[in-house]
Amino acid sequence: MKDLLFLVHRIPYPPNKGDKIRSYHLFRHLAERFRVHLGTFVDDHNDSQYIDPVKSLCASSHIVPFRPGLAKLTSLTALISGEPLTLRYYPNRSMRRWVKDVIAKHAIRKVLVYSSVMAQFVPASIQALKLIDFVDVDSDKWRQFASRKNWPLSWIYQREGGCLLRYDRRIAENFDQCFFVSKAEAAFFENLAPESRERIHFFNNGVDADYFSPDREYPNPYGNDDPTLVFTGAMDYWANIDAVNWFSQKVFPEIRQGVPDARFYIVGSKPANQVKMLEKIAGHRVTGRVDDIRPYLHHATVAVTPLRIARGIQNKVLEAMAMNKPILATPAAMDGIPPGDGLEISVSEDPRFLAEQAIRLLKKIGDQRNCRANREFVLIHYNWSDNLKKLDTFLLS
Image 1 (tube, one colour):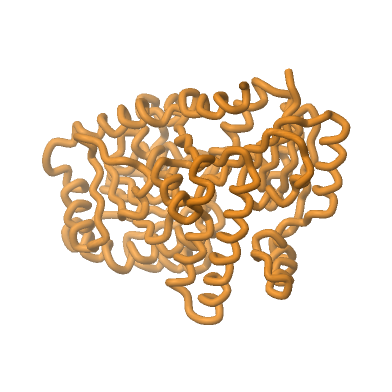
Image 2: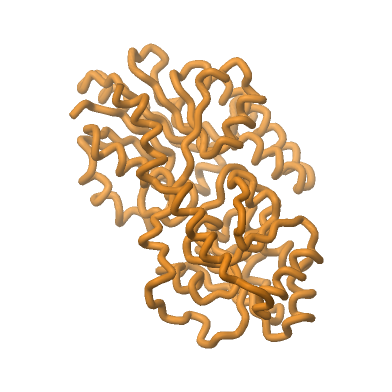
């Protein structure tokens, strides 16, 4: 096996949130084909327990724990240097040193970077094939954040979006090939960085369809069969916080008028105080971290993804589709997923329309056999093994 340097901004295990799902499957794919030298960070103390299992898949590794609170303060120094805050967020001295040593010791000729922030650790002088998985156009997420925040956060986020885009364009020019999470995301970046158009590609995310199977028996976490809407996701992430608050305020009240016993479950780790406060509203439940989200999906009536800020592909949508669930979503949540015929997916920014569709589904009005089509769509288009073969075209040549 040949050696490959893999740099990823967050330890690629466990696959329990959006970016880690993609990086985990990418990591496993690489480990079957290369001697992987992994450089990564641990920003959640709960993930420290997985360091040894991850190391077992590597030829060598450098896994650096750090404290996000301190990192946020450190990142503010970028306001003086003119860099993106994101770059200064990650401690870099030991990572730079390790990367330099690994390249020299193992004569690294293939490098794969996951998330553009990790490109800062790749020496400009390296003679190697350099690939980068940007995943999403993160600079646009900061722009979206800015549009929904007041000053001074709006200014900081707008600045970060601009700085990060300039940085990403430089990286795209200096790497041999660049990848994104969907065709739509790749096309979006092409418009922002036309000088790199020939190097821009995509490979879709996938779903472990055997794991997210509707054909298993799952305990009912709700305790009964009352009509239930469920949202899944990391609940300390501002886009998710914004989504559930908007849905709670603008959509759910009308749903309760039509279906008085309807419940809205918010399932995900580290719920912010703004999310916890929603439990004071009738019909709401905030679970915090759960060991397994599948029972919550399986026994829910409808999966909702009312994101107003999003880029790329939403794994929460694909997982719910794989579990045969009807989907209620905003356009932002479906941006990276192309439409398909016969799917049970209702998409709108209009709260009244979403409420009407939710009531229809909660009352089980009409033929819901199309939910099976949701799973079939995922099986055809979102298979990890097939989608990751796009990388092999470049890495194994």
